[in-house]
Image (tube, rainbow, N blue to C red; front, side, top):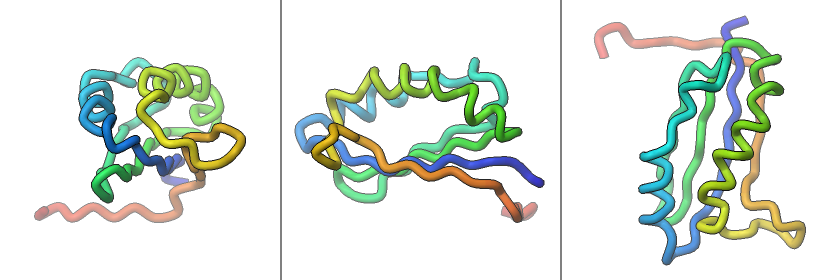
Length: 104
C-alpha cells in the first residue's frame, strides 16, 4: 500500500473565482495529521479539482472536520451541484501504484 488519495471536484461562481483562488492560496492544511500534500488544479475557467494525499486511511477519516472547516472558508464562492446544497463531488481511494520521474 502506497497511501490514500481524495479527489474533490467543484466549480466556482464566475464572479467568485478570483476570491476563491486568493482564499485557497492563503490557506494552509499543513497542520492536518497524516496529510502528505494538497494540490488544487484549475481545469476550466471556473472548474477545479482538489487532490489530497494521505499516509493512512485513518488520516482520511480524521481529517474530515478540518477539511470541512477549510471548505467553509470559500463555500460561498462555489456553485451548488444539486438540490441538496452540495458544492463538491468527492471520491477517495487507495493508491495502488505511484511512479515518479527522477529526471523530471
